Amino acid sequence: MVANIRSGSSPGGALRYNKEKEDKDEAEVLFWQKMLEPFDKHGRMDIDACMESFWPYLEANRRTTNTVFHASLNPSPEDRLTDEQLRKIACEYMERMGYGNQPYIVFKHKDIERQHLHIVSLRVDEQGRKLPHDFEARRSMEILRDLERKYNLHRVSRERSRPTRWDCIG
Image (cartoon, rainbow, N blue to C red; front, side):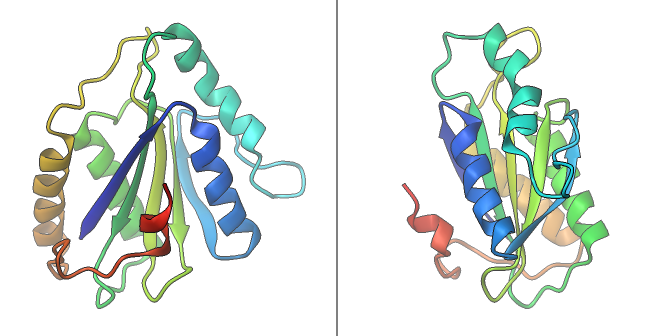
């Protein structure tokens, strides 16, 4: 499994990206944690509701510039995972990365030959404290190797993985 981790100043961009995918039926909300219901009355993703969930955290810390954690978790195309397995992987990944108590939303993308996850969260907690993200890429890789063993997944390295369309987004 390969993770692509991005940061930013506002979750709005990551949420809009995932909503566009959902609107094209190329993604769906798999689950969310510590957030308001992320759907409008028509069952479509509601970016404003998601932003309302993140807003208290962002208001508590106005000094940190890169408050957004946006990760794409990409299993091998050979791995066929159920939604329940994807949920468990996302939860364990977020917990072990130190974001387990954060509000976050998980999207399952099906816009390329393999299903993969996008997770949108924040790097600041409820009290406005910035969460440590030192050596985030190294920690992420170690966690992914453990998850590959635990779920009997094919090992994928960045060198073997083909770039996704998301890799090209700035």
